[in-house]
Image 1 (tube, rainbow, N blue to C red):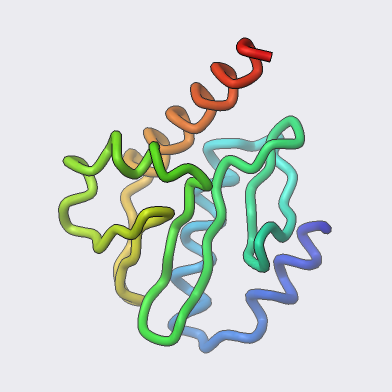
Image 2 (cartoon, rainbow, N blue to C red; image 1 turned 60 degrees about the horizontal axis):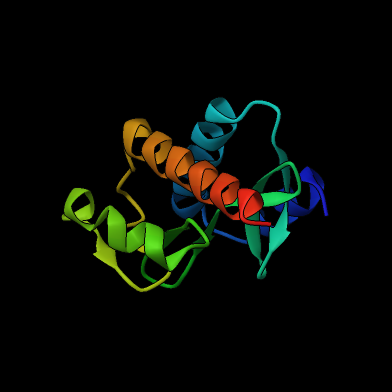
Length: 121
C-alpha cells in the first residue's frame, strides 16, 4: 500500500468531502514528515516504523479520525467534547476541521502507546 492507494481512495469523494480529507492528510504528514502512507482497515493511514499512527475516512454524513486505539479516545475524551466519539474514533462534519494541535496530541499519545507496548515485549 502506498500514497498512490490513498490518492485512489480520496478520488472517490466529492470536492467538499475531499477538502476535509486532504486537510487531515496534510496535517498528519506535516506532523510526521517521515511517515509512510497506506491503507489500513480500508481507509487511509499514516504509518511510522511499521505501526499505524492514525487513520481517517469519509462516510455519508461525516468524516472520521481514527487513532487505532480505543484507550486513546477514552484518555482524551475531555478534549474531544465538540466531536462525536465512538469507541474507536471521532466524527466531525464534512465542513469541520480538526485543529492541528489536537491531531498533534493524538499522534503523540499514540506514539507513547506504541513505545509502551514495545517496551513490554
